[in-house]
Length: 99
Image (tube, rainbow, N blue to C red; front, top):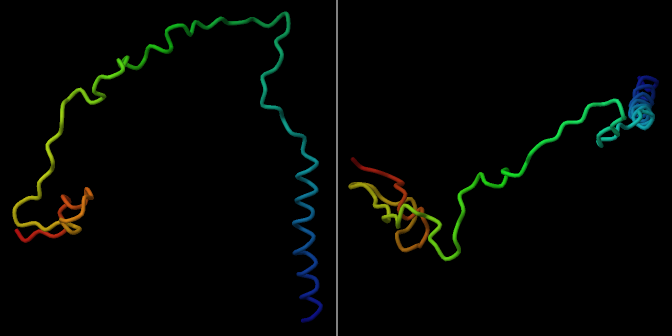
């Protein structure tokens, strides 16, 4: 039994070391694009209007154009998930309802 343990221990050390050496031998590929040659066709891309996708915001205006929202109310017969004395949004979240 003792001979098998030494064999397993040796294999357990040799395999990770072999994987490390094999991983270091693999050449890395650069992520940069290849340099175009004189014969390769080039494509021009017009990106002038790319920045006009979002609506413009004028400084000093309200970011929410729909207006102020009403504070949510608990339905009848429901208790809040947390104490009503807190200023948390969970104070208006129903935790337990009777009806």
